[in-house]
Amino acid sequence: MNESEKVLMVDDEPNILEGYARELRGEVTLDTAISGAEGLKAVEQKGPYAVIISDFKMPQMNGVEFLAEVKKKEPDTVRMMLTGYTDLQIAIEAVNRGHIFRLLTKPCTTNDLLDAIQDGLEQYRLVNAEKVLLEKTLSGSIKVLTEVLSLANHAAFSRASRIKQYVGYIAKQLDLPDLWEFEIAAMFSLLGCITLPTAVLEKVYRGDPLNKAEHKMYSEHPKVGSDLIKNIPRLENIAAIIMAQHQPFHRSKPGSSLKDEDRIALGGYILKAALDFDLLLARNMPTAALLRRLQSVIGQDVPEVFEVLKDIESGMERKMVKKVRIKDMDRQMVLDQDVFATDGLLLIPKGQEVTFPVLARLRNYADGIGVVQPIKVVIHTGTGVRKSRG
Image 1 (tube, helix red, strand yellow):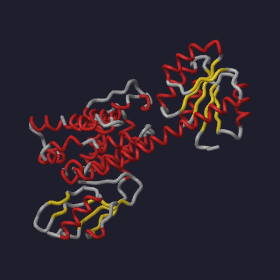
Image 2 (spheres, one colour):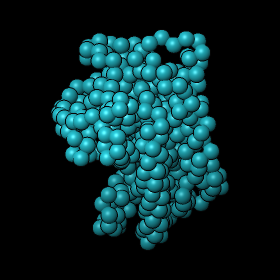
Image 3 (cartoon, one colour):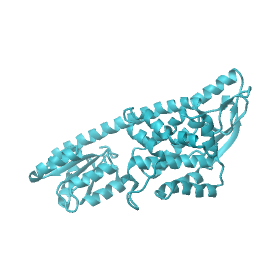
Image 4 (cartoon, helix red, strand yellow):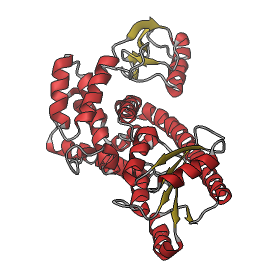
């Protein structure tokens, strides 16, 4: 019995739940609920569940309606339904529409129920194993790609690692599912900027006004980035989030759960908030002025995001600035100054995270032309998100 793989049973007849709980004791980690509403509360407070089994015929919210809500909140949970023979045709249609893993008929013996649960747990493991593999493979590949591209376009890609940290922190604090999609969207958020002149990006970063042609170029970079990756399998949502970063977001109704909002639109909003936050940090605003400006830029549609960003700002202060030589650099550092070759060539700009390609570039130049050393770096010692002012 794996206690991390919990099972939830929902039925409006307490005696049935008590019987199953008694028979399954020691076999599975089981929670019970006597209504769809209580089941959703359990999902919210005690989840995630590996398997959820619901009776079909319940008052207020039947099994199909309940499991449809579960699918929205926890799409990886394996969903099953119990039904009487008289409801069989209705239930079969519900299975076809609602992507229910298995249909069980009443009366259901303990052995049949346990077999179904074991099959459901195996399905849950398979889905999550594929998901973990996908996340690690994609994240690793994309990290390598963005590190290499950062050498070709410093102004755009030196920001990518910071944006990923901000977005990941926000999504985690808001308890949003599939965190990896938000983080990869953040890493690719500025991919379209590879087509822009460096001078335009520098003006954006400094807060200088853009002329009409420059504004058009910059406003189109999300579409360029989205178009570059939308045909890669499994990255369709990520491409859509990148595309949405300059689009407005409006909550479906006041006070609604963010998990129930449109994921693409919300992801675009979080991406925009993180990008705006990074730009304001780069301009060295006092904290109070920065937060006022940020609040006006990202709006009031999702105050939860603003509150998380306030926490990021207060939680990122613990850092140490020191001067190091290239031989002492590691990938836990961020450059706190522009790095030049001894002939005056700008090698890496301030604010770039020290990555493997960055180290390789600096070491090669140090062994050849020469690099101005020591170099000022930021070493982050706190638990908050990494802070960079350049």
